Image (cartoon, rainbow, N blue to C red; front, top):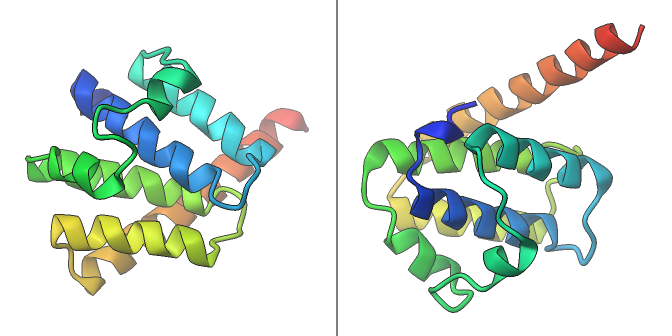
Length: 136
């Protein structure tokens, strides 16, 4: 929803973390793959999986996050990551660890994270409702 506001470097970093989240259980679920494709369209990017995986920070999430300096981009990144983790209603322990790393690196407090989680769940619910209306 807000991903177009990120610069190209942050877009690639966002997709790198998305890949880590989506593949954390060893498999991309269809809902995650569809959402990653939607993210790319929204951002106007077409990075290959290879480009995403070979992030310049050497696959270290904390190093990638450390390069995202402005607060608006940090909030956008975290909000949209929450959309991904709730896309399949399966927010597992590894994904929680990754989100906790994001929270810690950006210095977000628990109350902000709760608001972002609620926003992401609501957005996913509205998207499912919208698709159901289209599919009628």
